[in-house]
Amino acid sequence: MLDACLSGKVVVLGVGSRWRGDDAAGPRVVERLASGTSALCIDAGDAPERHLGEAITAGPEAIVVVDAVDFGGAAGDVGVFAAGELSPRFGTTHDTPLAVLMRYLETESRAEVLLIGIQPARVGFGDPMSCAVEESVHLVADMLSARLNGAGEVPDGPLATAGRGAPSARLGGEIA
Image (cartoon, rainbow, N blue to C red; front, side, top):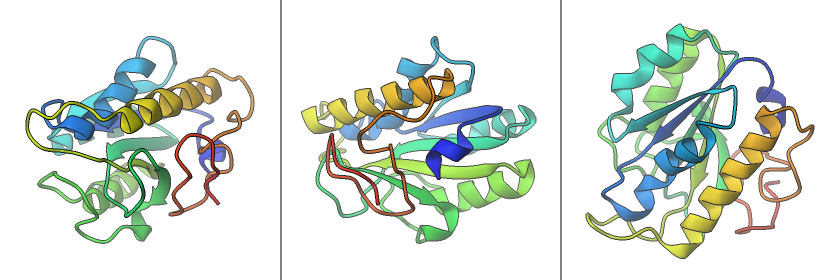
């Protein structure tokens, strides 16, 4: 599922606050991707609604939102979700629920929109990023970079067989 949507024109929207520990996962993934891929990488920070127009006017075939979200996994677990799989307040620290943002992006852009969620350990103001989430940020960025740069299939690991809504085992399991 994830691999199929990473062809063509892609926008990667990193969501999260750099001031709130693991919530910085989305912006950190985008930061790692920005200089090494043809995808439009947008650091939307903690106000993603301010960047929706930029994502839509790019005319993408797919929009991948990356954020730290509490889906009940262990710190650093990675899950891939469609908008319809998210409850209205799906474990996010942002004012506008991710499900609402994703549905709006789908409607206005007609692109496939997926969320790559990284399970946070801590999101307190001033907290440092946890080691588990830092490792997952590197892993997710490296996997996205490989696929977006035409390196074939997503390498083995948590995003290799991405399925909807199932968290991976941290660093090495599969999303089933």
